[in-house]
Image (cartoon, rainbow, N blue to C red; front, side, top):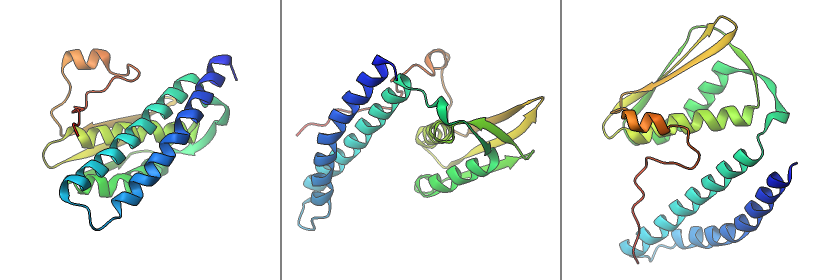
Length: 181
């Protein structure tokens, strides 16, 4: 592992330890039945922000150390089906469904963890971007020697400016409102 990768892993480990402790106490508080609505809101906000912090750490680590050492042959459609199943309850809570259109039986050479991370992020972003009922459509097909995945949603889409910065590490279009105590 390069020195940058080692530094990233060390920092991530050192940050994750206190986050795990804080998250554990927040989860215990979340189970308390005597919390008022404001206290419940604060605990839920803490848990949400701790999850977001974990995502940032994972993204940082994946940039520092790409996982190219675990390439496998993956049945693409099966993986997409599993991820769709994983996100179904999250999508259903927002009145959003999945349409899956697998035209070919495809297998790809890739790290399965990276594939899952990419697809979950794209599909979850699609769900979160829709403010009314809709659907996420995932299509796969073979195009020459490549597997083609097309993911579309019925949300409002991205502006030209947003498209230009799509893929920038750590950039988010999600509104992150500050929470005051």
